[in-house]
Length: 87
Image (cartoon, rainbow, N blue to C red):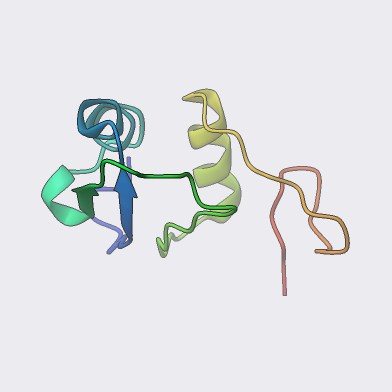
């Protein structure tokens, strides 16, 4: 899904296998493409970011949503119905 987009990110987790499943199976990334490191006292961040340039953002969001990815909506962020902040 996002394999050839140049996606990059870095995050910690207390469950490497769950992270590998989500990023590898759900998002379709080769886990070596992103940096996931084990951190026993891991606490989820208040936000996450995965940067991924795509040719058609609407199609990408539709595909990710169909795969079960939930896009956050933030008050005042001027996001559309898909959760995309445009412009």
